Length: 208
Image (cartoon, rainbow, N blue to C red; front, side, top):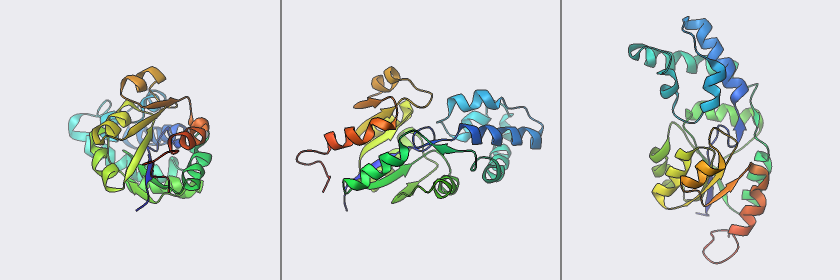
């Protein structure tokens, strides 16, 4: 098995804020429970239940999760766009003979809809995982570097002893990502191909 680069999805490979904003607004219309969609999209990363627990009573959260996920394909997919440099980042991984592994807190079937809509492909996709919960998937799929926008992504990388690459395109700034253990921090993915070429040079890089 060749080596792999792992990526988070929301705010790492895709800017899903426009679509998720629409999905939250649809949830409000459907349930009558107000969700501040503009606020919610500023803190993407943690599991959906975490956000919905801010708006729904505890005994209604699971039903809200189910309703939101039913609405998601109709509202959230089309408005979502690739993050700056994402398409080129994936191409750079394959140019180095490495596999693309996406490990995300988003439900796998919804993540797959985003990838299909945007013409992105992954060799492996693992969903519904967050922070340390991503560790098993990173190990299983031979991930050597994990790229993410959230401090929890750096925790995931640190948990399994791989290099975390932080991108400051989500809710966490460069300093936060560094403090969380990122080996490298980029302002966005446009700098990733050059970084990947740099870190895959040398013995034991897994680039062959």
